[in-house]
Amino acid sequence: MSQLKLFVKQWEALGQISALCRWSSVISSALALVMGMGLVITANRDPLVITERCGQRNVAQARRRPIKIDPKDVKRFALDFVTAVYGDETPKQILMAAKCTTTEGFLEKLSKKLGPQKIAQYVGRATAVLEEGKTMVSFDRIVTIDKTPIAARQTVELKIVQDTQTACNPLGLYVNAMTVRKGP
Image (cartoon, rainbow, N blue to C red; front, side, top):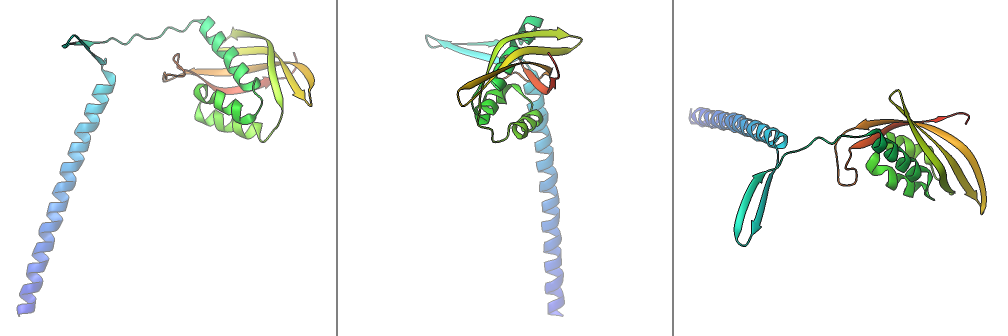
């Protein structure tokens, strides 16, 4: 009989522990939800700027201004991107230069395409044209193999998307796809 009472007491203690675990789970979930909502609200508000001068603190709310991107900015971005991709000596340098201005999926595709090549290449006479939502860049691709330059005119079509602005990409423009066009 005493073993039965001991078993019942242990069973009751187990039930209390289980209830305590359920309540702590509910409370921690509610806390996580409140913190997540606070994070979303804070991320969407204009940032506070706190300055201190001569021991006096000034607090002001900064206003975020949307960046207006001109077609000239898109052209400059496209030319810089093509120069970065086709203007370095090793695939590793090309990928490092393109990292800030490409989406992750496209960067992986570009990495596979470049492979372990060991060539030097440069860009000359590059021009960018915007037409119907496409960015076309024509340039002279100069490839040097054993100090012998080979030049060919190349045209690429870039799909440029706008996303998050970063320190190395203040306009927030990213290349999502690149298609090499046949012919001049």
